[in-house]
Image (cartoon, rainbow, N blue to C red; front, side, top):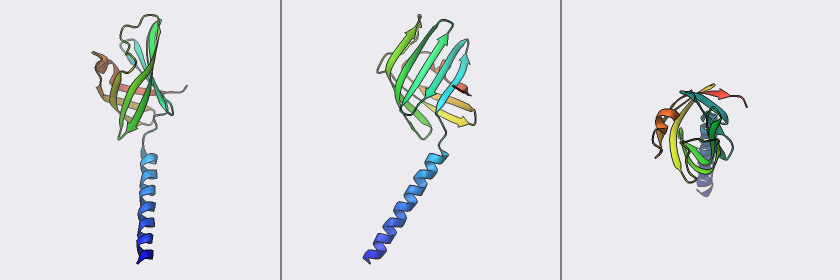
Amino acid sequence: MFRLALGLLAITAGLALAEEKKDKKDAPKLAGSWVRDADGTEIKFTFKDKTLDVGAKNGDNGMTATCDYTFKDGVVKAKVTKVVEKGEFPAKPNEGFEFSFKITVKEKKATIDDFKSELEGAKAVVEGEYEKKDD
């Protein structure tokens, strides 16, 4: 009886690991940079192993926000840990600012929608189709 229970436990654990590997394999690849133009402002999301850099650039003015983030079930949740401004950029987030969005990746295109934050006007600028950019 003990052997049977142990065998079932091993099979269950093996199936759970296989399912987890499948989920990771099927997850979209967020690594790298995704860019779009929003009325003359370049919006760029750069996904790294443990951080996400969000940049906005318009001429000589811009900003980059470094964020801690999680990615689960197609949703990115992020919290700004550092902001660097170049020139004068009017709509930059503060450290501690939190936001989230859905992202769908298909080959070299990504669509961001359902953007949620307290920064007024950001939704219209951030949501849309992005292209993969080779760094």
